[in-house]
Amino acid sequence: MKRLAGLILFLFAFTSYSQENPSEYMGNMSAYYKQINKDTWDYMKQSMRSRNGKRAEKRRMDLVKTMQKSRYEINKMPAYKGDASLRKSVVSFLDLAVYSLNNDYKKIVDLEEIAEESYDAMEAYLLLKEKVNEKSDSIFQVLKTAETEFASKYDIKMVKDDSRIAKKLNNGGEVIGYYNDIFLLMYKSQWYERQMLGALEANDFAEAEQYRQTLELTAKEDMERLKLEEPFNGDSDLIEKCHRVLEFLYGEAVRYMPDQINFFLVKDEFEDAKKTIESKSKRSLTQSDVDDYNQKLEKFNAAVNEFNETNSYLNKHRSKRYDEWTNSAEAFFDKYI
Image (cartoon, rainbow, N blue to C red):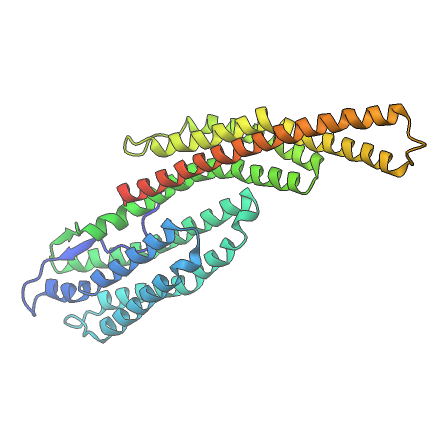
């Protein structure tokens, strides 16, 4: 996936001298950028720390309000010696940014509701988020060009914004893009595991077996793909935790799930034998009927114990692997954003 910059990032600060100076004119505009960057970071942070876009709704509305207020104040500013080009560019940028926040990001929330229905839906959801950020980048580049042209025209020195929030925003897109790449490798197999377990619970053994075979294939393939991922700034912890999840899912599909699926076949055989016994009177039962029932009862009881032990083992280690992944993801975001 592409590594995109954050939603909005004002990269430059402007040296300020006197009221008659074009540099101060730009500085008066840039004063509004500080709050916009702060609210952008709050929104971006909430969005990436949770896949629940609705939780970020308040942050989104705060950002919209900040942009609308800034747009109103900047639009009231006079042109610099008759030159309104910069003011128009900033106002236009804010109009487009607000439109994107009110429309494009609503599509993200809508798509999020179906994201977990399939791997393709999750991939489409993450891709839409990146495309919206890419669109925001394109909008910002127009503003950046206008600022550069104004500064060049009036011989203004532009200084890169090295504030803490600016650095976080600048780094955010790359961090999220990297995380999404790793997450999708894990998510595909995780999704097939959920379908497999759901089919088992519904007593659909044929479907459970199909998902088991697919899980075996995808987990193995994604472990190979994971080998192609480079550590992020030398940090391979996210890769390692993803591999541990995939390793568990592959082992579950290959070593444990065949017997778990087979348990339900043993259960069906026992229940058929039980029905046969119950459908006959004691007088009509043959020794063969009794022996067959006892044999299948013994087999079923042994299978129940094995099924429960295996299920407990899998639940314990599944939870452990996913907790490791979640903790690694939290640490990853804490460290790099």
